[in-house]
Image 1 (cartoon, helix red, strand yellow):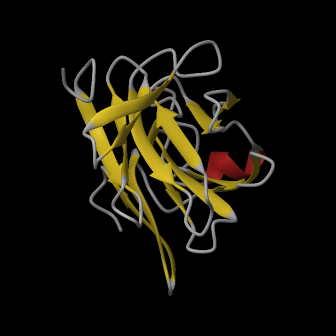
Image 2: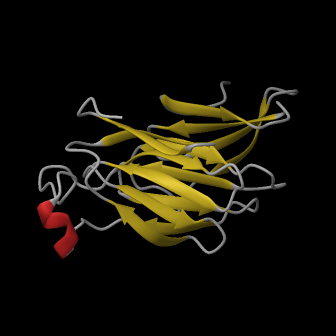
Image 3: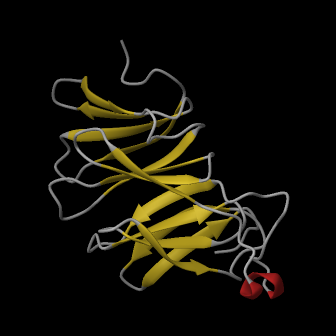
Length: 174
């Protein structure tokens, strides 16, 4: 028995080195205890991903905090109980999007390629397939901002650092 039921897309280890979270192609998120090398919980179901789970992030500075992003254009904020709050990302059709390179890309839906928490654990960034970055309030799971214009293709990585938020895209832009 492995720690996953399907192909693994990402693994994240908590700050204590005790727990690992695994994003799977089947849409599930697995929580594993690295001391016993056993699964503690599978996060899936009606509030989970309906397609590939591409990315996971553990919330820093908290006893619990887990988010995942997937090819179903959803970010899920998971509770330790296994319940999740799913937030669907809709295509960026705002007026501001039409004049930017990161505007609506009809062939590139807002699939979620990457998720990352800020160091203080208050925000979550999501790199999206339409070239935008979504910024969520980690407390209430609300999409607060959509950053546009930085990428002309999918945003495949996001990372909060002391100088600020960095994103990398399939357009070779950072």
